[in-house]
View (tube, rainbow, N blue to C red):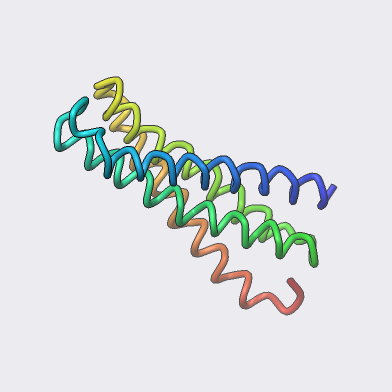
Length: 128
């Protein structure tokens, strides 16, 4: 069971990492001809958060390879869901002008924050 979680989180990390680099490059080189400055800023923010959390998910996945624990699975799941919701809502705002998506951003952001707190709590566990 632990190996399947590790593989799933590696997939999330790889997909989020690739999307983040692509979106960041597009935001820096040419997206301003298609979108407003505000929308380009949303894409840039989404790409930065996506890349940071792709690395965090990757770290959790690697840690799960060595020690399968619930707390690391929870942290990786929170990072994955939070990245999907937070970054997805910013991208929906930027590309689709879907204003209702903005309401989801705080939910995703809260998941990311709780994910980092979960990582910190893992440090207090006697056995990871």
